[in-house]
Every structure is written in structure tokens, then in C-alpha cells.
Length: 555
Ligand SMILES: Nc1nc2c(ncn2[C@@H]2O[C@H](COP(=O)(O)OP(=O)(O)OP(=O)(O)O)[C@@H](O)[C@H]2O)c(=O)[nH]1
Image 1 (cartoon, protein in one colour):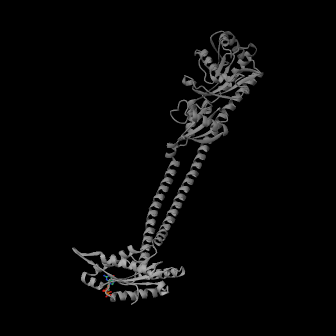
Image 2 (image 1 turned 90 degrees about the horizontal axis):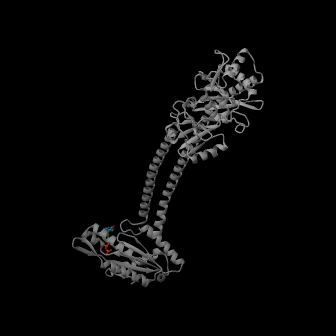
Image 3 (image 1 turned 90 degrees about the vertical axis):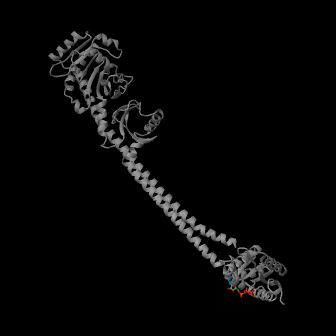
């Protein structure tokens, strides 16, 4: 009996598991889908980051290339002037002027006050003090004339358009020429000293620049504001001799402006120009961050990544760094995007909407899962109740007549097949009508429930009992012989009769029943209906004999 109920309960639980499984699958699919969307979105975002930095790098490269081209043009002009020096009254006058002044601490000569820029120089002594400098008399005059000629060209340059702050030539022979001329009274010696001690100048020794190409330098430690520049420089060589350096200074302000203009309006993040030591040279942000914006470990990681790719991106802690190396600058352009910035931008808004949609969908899914689960559970509880009602008698909780007869027949068949004894006990409560009439139907019902509970307690594992009439019950006892069955019936009779039922306050009654017992072995027949009719006949005999007794034989 309990096995059946358990099996039924499992059937009831099984659909709940299916419901749980289905909802779990839907939840996982929606989560997976949202996650995929975020990944696609993120890929799109990182691609756009890389594209942005590449386009800025390309623009900066174009700009730098223009400056490099100009420097090369100036070098070609100087080399041409060195190869075929001109000699005019004015050049002769300028050289004579130089000869007069060369021993003085500082001097300035020019071809013409209207045309050409002045050449500024220091004394022979000063030149001798610096091992990088040399005033070779063989080359000196030609170089001075070439420099004066170059001054005429340089005067025509438009520094506004070129973005360079100034273009200049620093000679190893103790003089210089600049696109931003100054008066002769200014401190020429100090200026020249600064020019030849800056990193750009050193970078063009034979050892530092064996391929004699362009060098980009940044005077990071420069104390003076005007020395905070990025310098593009090119050595001037002629007939295997290093004459000096042609250079262009770009103020950091100009570089900052360039990067700032490269940013779209309302665009988050910042673009930084870093040197090869990862030190910030220029930035689109105000104020420009000083020094390095990366820790040592971050720098190491970026160096590793940049060694493999010229452009790319990497998520470093909470910052996304996209980079593009520059073709004409020994450094890298990077775009820094913090997590906060990315979340406050378009990407963050879409991400937020996606997250909210996922949360909303998950909540709705959870709600519908709860409702459907309850519905399924209720449905199965109802089905279980209906099933129970179809099998059992609601009042006594014993099998109802139909179920009992079906089960009893099955047991009888099984006993016959297995050659097992089988007994049937038929019992009927005595004078039940009187109980109803005297104490009312409720008391009658109570008496029925009481009798049924005693029956249930008296049964063994394989025995079954059912209510087969109003106050009539039947018990089937497989594997039981007649004397044993009669003893069981007697035990039930005694129990029934010995217990008092409370019908009113201070009033109890006792009930009794009459029993008829039949046995398949005695009758030589396993037909249940036949055995029941014999037990019924004996029950009638017990009633006739005075009730409250067991009859297990005829007559
Ligand atoms: N309270 C109650 N009474 C029932 C129920 N089913 C049948 N009865 C009553 O049981 C009584 C049976 O009466 P009888 O068949 O005359 O038998 P009896 O009064 O027990 O007399 P004997 O069987 O001869 O001892 C009837 O009055 C039925 O109405 C029930 O479910 N509840």
C-alpha cells in the first residue's frame, strides 16, 4: 500500500523536476546570450579603441613626417651649400667680421640686416673646452657661409603652420643659427652651451647615431619651461665629417594641443604620448600627468605586449590601454580609458541596459517559475487526492469496496498459484442502527473510524482490509490457516469490545462485532467471492448465535 503511494508521490515530484530543469535551461541560455552580447560589444569597443588610437597615430605620423622631410630638405640644402660655397662681397664681409670677433666670448654675424638670420657664436677658447666641439679651420669658412645661406631659407619658414616652435642649426665649430633670432646683446655663450649639452646633440655622435638618421629626443629633466620640448634632429655630415645638427623643437604645449584636438568632443579617456621609457611627454588631458602613469609591473606587461604588436590593446587592472607605435618617433601613443570612464560612456550605457534587461528577464523568469511550480504541485496534490479517494474510503481510510475486491482477487490468485493458504474474515458491527439511533450518526461515524483503526493495527504486512458495506468490513489474510485466522478474528473482536468510545461528557459506549471466517484450504477453493460468501454465512450464524463472537465453521 505504502509502496504504491510512494510511487505515486515520485510521479508527482517528477514533473516539478522537469519544470525546474526547463527554467534552469532558459535561465542559462538567457545568461549565455547576454554574456555573448557583452563579449561582442566589448570586442567592438576594443576594436573602436584601437582604431581611434591608430587614426591619431597616423595623423601624428603624417605631421612628424612633414617635419622630418623638412629637416632632410634643410640638410640637403646645407650639404649643397658646403659642396659649392658662394663667395660674394657680403660673404667676404661676414667672414671678415667673424675673424675680428672669434676671440671674443660671444659674437653675431649676418649677411644682411633685411634678409637672412644671424649666426651666433662663441670664442675659440670655449670651443676647445668641450671635447664634442671642434673648430677646424679647413672647413670653418665654408660651413659659416652655408649657415648664412641656410639662414636666408629658414627665414621663410612658417612656424605656425609647421607647429614646430623653432628650427635651428648647431655647429660643432662653436656657432648656431635659429629661426627665432635674438639680439646680439643676449647671452649667446650660455645659449650655445645649452644647445650643445642637450640630449639631441649627444645623440648624433658617430657612436650614438651610426646610421645618421633622425633622432627624436625629449629633455625630460629640463628645468626651464622653454627647454620642455620634443626635438627632432638630423646630423649634418659632409665628406664623412660631422659638422653639426639640424633640429626642430616642438613645444610640449603644441604636442598637447595636437593630442587634445585629436579627441572627439564629449569623448572619454585621454591620449598620451610616451617616450621609450614610458614617461609621459604630452597628453590630451589637462594637467599633463607628470612622470610615468604605469607601475613597474604594468610597464613590463605593456613592453611585452608592445614587443609583439605595433598596435593593440590590453586591459590593465581597471584601465583599458590601446596603443599605436609611431613610425617617426621613438615612443608610443596610448589611449587610457578607465573603467569609470568606459561605464559613463556609450559602452557603459549599453552594458547597463543589457544588465538591467537580463536582471528583469531573470526576475520575471523566477516569478513565473515560482507560479508554475506551485500550479504543478497543486495539480498533482489534487490528482493524488482524487486518486486516494478512488481507492480509499474517506471515513475509515480502509480500501473502499471496489479496490478491496480487486486486490482481494489478486491476492487469492497469487495464493492459489503459490499453493499458499488464504483466509477471509467478514465482520459486521452489532446493533449499529441502535448506536445511530441512540447517540446520533456522528457517534456512529466515530464508532466506524474506531473499528477501522483497530482493524488496521491488527493487520500484518501482506493482509488487506476494506469496508465492504455500511458497517461491514472484510479482511484477507494470505499465508494464513483457519485456526490462525480465527485467532486473529478473536483478537480483533476482543479489542473492539474492550475499548470504550466517548460519546458525550462522562458517557462512553462499547461496540462489538460478529465475525465469520473462511479458509481456502478447507474449502478447496481459492475463489474470493466464494470464500467471502462462506465467511458471510458464518457471520450470519455468529449474529444468530448472539453476536459479539467469531464463527469459523458451519453449523
Ligand atoms: N453513522 C453511520 N451509520 C451508517 C453508515 N453506514 C450505514 N449506517 C447505518 O448502519 C445501520 C445498519 O443497520 P442494520 O443493517 O440494521 O444492522 P444492525 O443495526 O447493525 O444490526 P445487526 O447487524 O443485525 O447487528 C443502518 O442504520 C445504516 O443507516 C455510516 O457510514 N455511518
